[in-house]
Each structure stands twice: as structure tokens, then as C-alpha cells.
Image 1 (cartoon, rainbow, N blue to C red):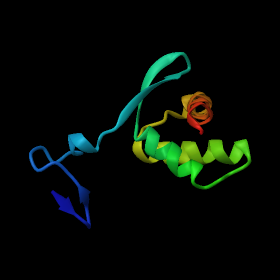
Image 2: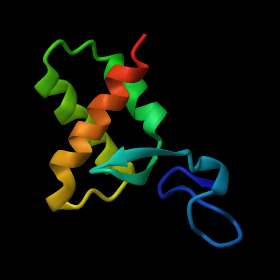
Image 3: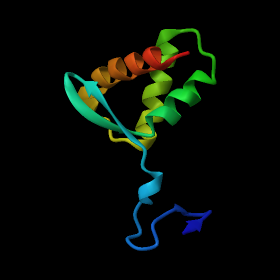
Length: 91
């Protein structure tokens, strides 16, 4: 069910549609952690053509936080993991 004012939700449970969840597992602080929409996040940041690693890291964290809960105490570890994924998947 799509309601442009409220978003795209499951008609059965009212939550996020199962096909809208795109979770990849990455290592955050040595622990496997699911990150929803990771490929979408990386592609979007790559499209910005940012040259500065600090700016790339900040944008990755910002966008990842839109789809995922990032604990404040683990923010640096998430940043490290996202940067590893970004540089590892960059063409």
C-alpha cells in the first residue's frame, strides 16, 4: 500500500514492506551487524563525488542513520565499517 503522505507500508501488518528491506551484514567493531539499504547508501554517496574521506564518512553515517539505528557509543565503529564497505565496493 502506497500513501504518498505517509510512506510505503505493508497492507497486512502496517510495517515496512518485506521487499523494501535490503539488509547486508558487515563487521562493526568485530561483530556481524545488519545494515538496511547499504548498497543504496553507498551508491548515493558515490554519486556525490566527494573527495575528502571525512566528508564521505559523515555522509555515509548520515544516510545509514536514516534507515538504521546507530548507537552513539558505536558511531565511530560504524563509520569505520561503512568506510571499509565504501572503499571495498568502489569501482
